Image 1: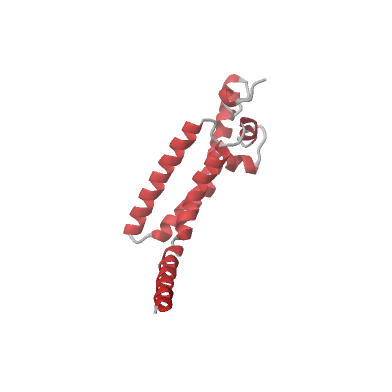
Image 2: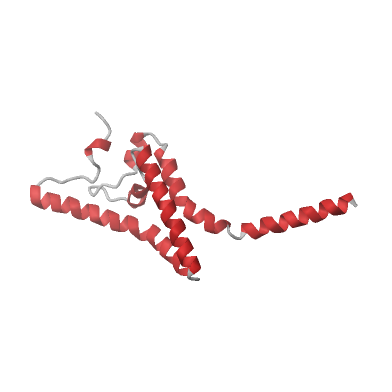
Length: 148
């Protein structure tokens, strides 16, 4: 009798786990950007500097990694917190309107397009600076450049 009871409990547990497993992609995909930002924040500053986009050397990896590179742990933590709150609120709103598909399309589009738009804006800033001052302004602010 005890064996039957243990078997039933294990089946019920497995059913409960399987019910939650279907939500796993909905948790993992939104968690990737903050996890990446927090991971990059642990890199030494020399390595983080290599991940920052500059208009004088256009690199696809830098275009995307710049959006996840922070030079202050507090800045990184505040961005991750605000991102998490925004994504959670947006997901709740879209799900309550039964528009989860639009949420996911928008989410992936933002992950792909925001870094490109950000890089283009930095190139425009550098170009405008060069036109107005005659100096080519890199997008890396002086306070994050490596010393020496």
